[in-house]
Amino acid sequence: MNYLINKKKSFSSILILFSLILSIMFLNHNLKNYDKIIFDENGSYHQMIKSDALRYLSHGDEIRKDLDRGIDFFETGRENFTKYLPPRIAALIFKVFDIELYKNFETKEINTGVFKPYLYIQCLVYFFSILIFYILTKSYFNKITLNFIIFFLCLEPTIFQYHATFWSESFFFSFQIIIIGLILSKKKNNLLFFLTGFFIGVLSLQKQYAIFYIIPVIIYFSFFNPRNKIISLSFLIFGFLITQIFVGYNNFKRSGVFYILANDNNIAFHLDLVPKVINRIKGYSGNEFVIKEAKAMKEWLMVNSIEFREDPNNKNHYMHYRKNIVNEKDKLKFDKEIRSRTLKYVKKYPLEFTYTMVKNGTHIVLLNPFHIYSDHNFASGEIYYVSKKHDQLVPFRIIYTLIIYCICLYGFYIFFLEKNYQLLTILLLSIIYFYGLSFWHGNTRYFLPAYLYFAFFFGRSLEKFTCSLK
Image 1 (cartoon, helix red, strand yellow):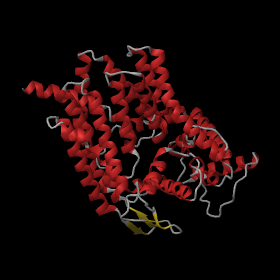
Image 2 (cartoon, one colour):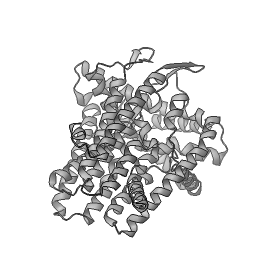
Image 3 (cartoon, helix red, strand yellow):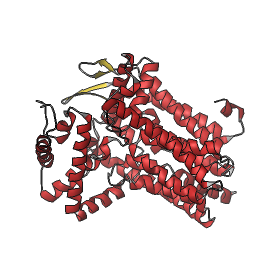
Image 4 (cartoon, rainbow, N blue to C red):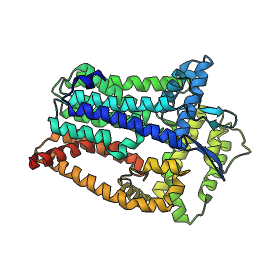
């Protein structure tokens, strides 16, 4: 932070420091009010640590305990079912600060009052990434435009809310910001290309679907790279491959199978979209479709002589059968069969799936600055979505979304008039990529990696507006 202090005349550096302090105040507010166990008719839950956050942190707790027992790092933890990096970040912080996730491991009662170091580090990483971006790009943009870009990245509420929570978005945004800063830096050298590829690899470890982001970046540098393209791209790809080989080796040491892609890539579509479409087509109610799929997958397990444990608590969901498969390599086969069934349904009902995906793709672009508020105040998203509070907040979300998009659209128009095709290329490739891989889901949170790049349109738009006022 010495850089921030020394550059007293830099509005951006002061803004970064101010936003960091504001974010710390916000996380302290969250911990004070929501770091609690809530008891209801369904049992108990922690207001901040549930759903995806609980899965990452509980996995991190297992890794930390494995390390404490002297187990080799590459043999720790569970299978690489979903995001690789979040549980390992949690494990590192838990080990360094001696944090226990559970107050009572047997009952899985989550601790309270011990997670401040985790959120502090998350905030520091995010705003340090903006500082790195500022240093890398201050010669690329004019001062006023860069100030407004920094303002958006620091304080835009839809993004800002995640730094004071246990969701995986904040670290993901941090890596995105460093990557775009490296890409736009005017001082190109082989080390910069290596670091760009390396951080794209790290980005994919935070959220698996970023693994192919290396492709649009290669396309961009193929057109806008004055250096030797073969050498530069070789360093880029080498940096990326290091991270993927690391993950593959970790999976191999633990399971005996070398694989890179997280296992939920094969089944996410079936889990999140297929039941909704098939239930509507067939007129199924409740979990009827899921129960039919569970029976089909149990039969598949038996036909293929795959060893699994019978679970007396089986809730008639095929994921319970997957959970109780003995060998991890057989779980991979299970996932491929689920993918095959998904493709079968899509081929049989293409129009219905297309309609649902387009509908979800329209909904996903609606900004939600209230997500963390609802996450902390409702037991689950399903409960919140049918609540009166959800309906009350929708008009405010629509108005806010329209204002932001109008500002950004004007910025895009200015870049186009200025023929700034180089910047537009990497921004549009990034937006299309992250939107294209998540639009089908319909969850507005999944749009945010694409939305992050709107900061550049926002910055150019407000710079033009302020200059016109002068």
